[in-house]
Amino acid sequence: MTLTAHRVYDPKLIKSIVTCPTMWRTVAEEGQHPESYRPDPEKDCWLLIRGGCGVIALYSFHAQNKITVEAHTHTVISARRKYRHAGAYASLRWIYNNAPSYEKMNIQVPVIHKNVRRFAREIGFQDEGINRASYLKNGKISDQWRMGMTRDEIKGVLDEQRG
Image (cartoon, rainbow, N blue to C red; front, side, top):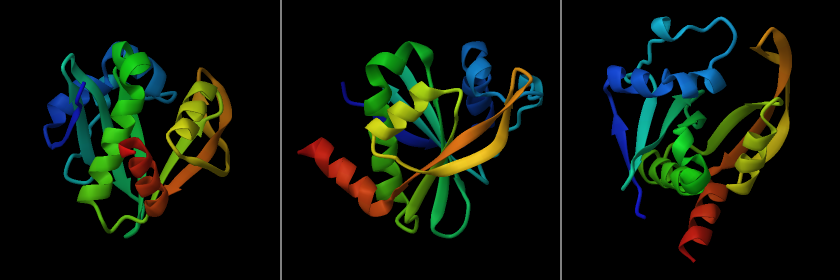
């Protein structure tokens, strides 16, 4: 199935996906409440990934500086097993083709989500360190893995997918 990626600016649409109860339970940190969540599509880039079955994922990209972007993924639970890789590659392709000033993409993965780290490695992210005691969930403070991918590494992943 071919997936499409396009930028969205509708804060109501973004909020409806991110705060969906099954999604919110996994992405929200301690003390965050869906009713107070306010996405800013003018400040951050929100990318909607769709396939024949509907919405696959929503990615957000936040500029850390002129050449570095931090990414977050919100993959619909029913699509995770079948489309997570294709959705991730679609987002990498979009950012590579539409944001040429970014030379680096970073993510942070809470250590309590080992499956997310494994997935990030599968699509090309490299371990870069630990952000200690930086995530609060269910009353427990935990570390986050810092992971990253350079623009050249993104190109390599995309070339591999085409090959």
